[in-house]
Amino acid sequence: MRVLNIIGSLGVGGAERYLSRVTPRLREHGVEVEICCLEKTGALLAETEAAGVTVHGTRFIFRRRSSGLPRLAPALLRTVGDIRRLVRGGRYDAVHTYLFLADLLGTAGAQLAGCKRIITSRRALHAWRHGPAPYEHWLELGTNLVADELIANSHTVLEDAERHERFLPRARGVVYNGVETDHYRPASPGRGKGPLRLLNIGALAPRKGQEYGLSALAELCAAGVEARLVLVGDGPDRPALEAQAARLGVGNQVEFAGEQLDPRPFLEAADLFVFPSRQEGFSNALIEAMASGLPVVASDVGGNREAVGEEGGRIVPPEDSEALATGILELSSDRRSLAAVGAANRERVTSRFSLDASVRRLADWYRLGPQLDLEP
Image 1 (cartoon, rainbow, N blue to C red):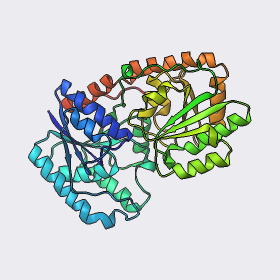
Image 2: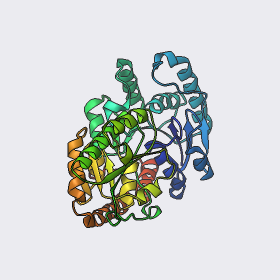
Image 3: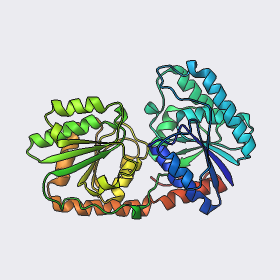
């Protein structure tokens, strides 16, 4: 079976990292997957091609939404034409699109090419999926009418789409992200001396809520807890976050580590993973931290609650630095207990969120058609 996945680029993001992991493995299940990037670029491009995956590109050059989609119409139409020619020439059995712009252009190009099976994805809560402009909602509606199937990466995301969108494909379900646990060495949370080592991984952008992590760190320090926070990632919010850390008096307790293709050294060196996002689908960073044997304090958004079991940490309200600090305090009050909490997380990822399980379910969906939904 031949499938074409369409995505904006192969930068360091959740959907992009997921594609780079699953596409080579799908061959083991009789599915040959190629990728079309609207822009053939990104930090994950080289390793994806090195794994034997064919990656195509289009003539589209992405510009931020300051221009708005209507002003990009000529470029969008050219890209739809590029995708139509690629799909028609490739004779794919299915086209599967990831993220809003790729959903929009990919479904249009596949439809014009006469593709018999078009699959779209939902990997974020609806409020964060695209901008608020009315035309974006109408474009989304058109995409839903064209698509035959929809795959979400968590039950929360699927339920959110069902609440907020019309004319969703009738065939829809969930395929969780997955990681290979044995690729992550277990950390040693709570066993080191010195400050409590807190870690966050994610783009420094509004949806990730790192400002609440900084405020929680300040509250911990005010309560007499010696702690440090490492932020792995980069993005537009970095200057504001650096200024906030200085203003709160915790600048010396915060390390801005920048974007990292391989976050494992930081995971191995941490005591606790702090995840104060405003929105998530089903976070790769979160299950990577769990696979590394780290306890978690995460906001109750998207699939975070589905990922973290009752024994794996604390789920707290979003945009609440006090609740975040309280969760950290509760978990770290006896540092010797952190290792057992982290071990439960590692076991949960192994049993429920392995890359093998994700690949098998996606391959079955491609080969056999939409599968019966999994329980949350």
